[in-house]
Image (cartoon, rainbow, N blue to C red; front, side, top):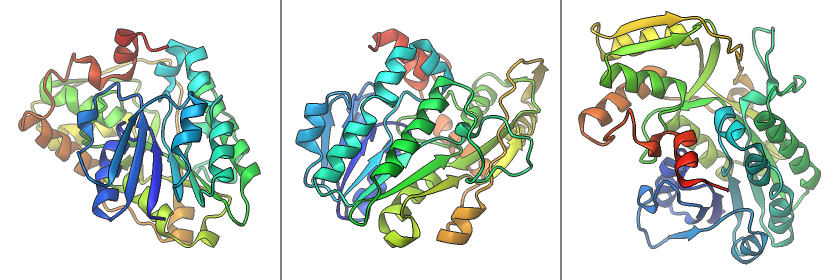
Length: 326
């Protein structure tokens, strides 16, 4: 598994994953629209950057052959971004997926790793949401994530190992930083406004530090194929209510942070179990939500995140509107 093709590799997770893979000796090809800039990735002799669109099937036919594995991260991320232009979301998140899987299998790729989402479960009453539960996606974003999971499993074979990851909400610092994810939002507001507004607060959110999330992808490249073949794994660590996350942020940033709570009609609540990935693959997260908050605080203090409250590059919806992505 020495040559790896990563879609969306210049995104929030990819910008942390790719340097780790280069350090581990992998040859990496990234295909990405690069709308957040190519500078989020290092220049490296073993890194090939393709500024391109996964909807360009001819480009996939040219660029995928010769790779041992594919990690598919590229998508219109999260519900608000998707709702901005549902047709665009479908054209990126669903339509090119099966052609990409077919091209990968036909050209000798041995392993295909798909980044789905824990939102595919919808709202569950059970205290622990596990991989074998019925999927009840509430939005087009999560419906298409679930649909791609079904497509992928059709292609699994002895020569083509497929595995799906359902990540929790990722948090922490990345060179391509997103400040539209719950822990990152709260930390940005606490550091740069001194005030956090919590909408509702009782909604549960499963969280995973970006360092742990990227370690999951590395593990899935390296682990024996029989342990992951045609399997699905939740990848999370800590489930917290949003109001508890706000208090954690205050604890790390300082007592001067004011927390304001207002009502919300957002009923999305996810409580995800990651016991399967621990027991079957031995994956143990090493970083907490508090670590993510501290990492972000340090980045703000070091001037790595200029104009963090307003600049569109940190907010998917704002940037999509600015560049009129179509």
